[in-house]
Image (cartoon, rainbow, N blue to C red; front, side, top):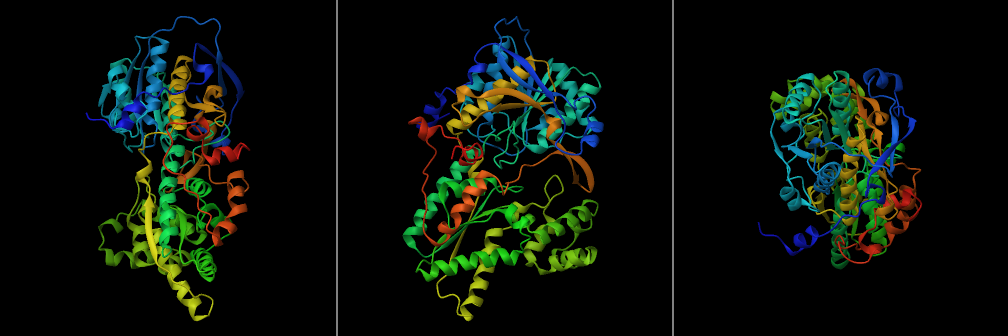
Length: 548
């Protein structure tokens, strides 16, 4: 296979492993844990894996001989830069335990586990994928592991291959499934450990111990580069407003990080919209006011960053979506209807308040809310062209303001959605190091004999050699949420905290960015150069730890 010059150079990069993982380790138990909420319900659902202690690794001065271990690995859900390095670190880790250890990759996600489709990942295969983006080494998928039949089918192939540990690399839903699987295998005495790794570019899988999910750093640097390019063009042509929708359905971490990196004129934070009980028209009016203020200074151009999940955070629409999710979970009539009949049917089924909200939406948006569902039964907000909806409504509002004598400028919009562009980029040095450490650390958790844990590497604003390695029980991250009309245990999403340092840094500067043109142009990811250029973590992480 032909490789680019960058591919060849990245293949030679050696991830920097935390010093504590460089030799033999022993595990130190911390305090017992409890779930973040709904403790009694979670404890009842996970009697064998609830209340486990936090774990931390330290150097072992008296290492013993370790037996070989056979490990399976699954890439679950959407891609995130660095997944290949998690697998590389896992491979090197189990080979460090014993060179006769074997690693098996289940193909195309959890579905390959259930259907017994796999390959053995050998050194020549692993070496082809070190420091590369994507999940193409074994592929990924969105099959949910949630039934006893699936668990038992997977157990058959684990026993056949002599696999005693399974590593699931995924986001909040995938790691929730990992917790359920760990509990089931523990309950039946299957002798299989289950370890999770925190993956999602959205940045909403984090807490005190999981400081960031892998892929967030790389994806936001990719998006920020392109936003910077657009802003340079914007400042050159001086005639367009660029409405940029950014991936991040359930939280606005990506939009906030990109705003901190590029200093756009406007960045909407969904969590703030919800906290202030803003309507869609409130959001539109806020954008229009800034456009008018810039026009008064002779600037008929600008950039607007929009999180893809904005619609769901607008309180009235959030209420509507919650009722739609419950209503449509058991209603198969809508999927077989003519599109022209859907709107009236849905209105007839909704409460009066939500029916009024639904009826007020543009027809295409209303239909998208009704027809397009993800595998979890939820609205696929990424398919709603929020950037076009907002720009059209802003144009209407500006026309009203012109009649009122409050606006005298020109408004033309360009639209962009940055999502898939960032999911499979070659990982930044930070993500390459972090992911390799997460995988290697997962091998150490396996060697420690634990199950139901997530690989945890912290202290991430320090040089990677100083990072702290260990594990936290997945059950401590769980709470109960409504899914498909039923209450189920899921990992609690970490939203943007309006009292947190990253948002506060943004809020302190946004008024200046709004009226003035303060654009920053980050450029492409720096893989090579001084450490302060190429090894920096995200601005979000630096701000959260008081280093921005």
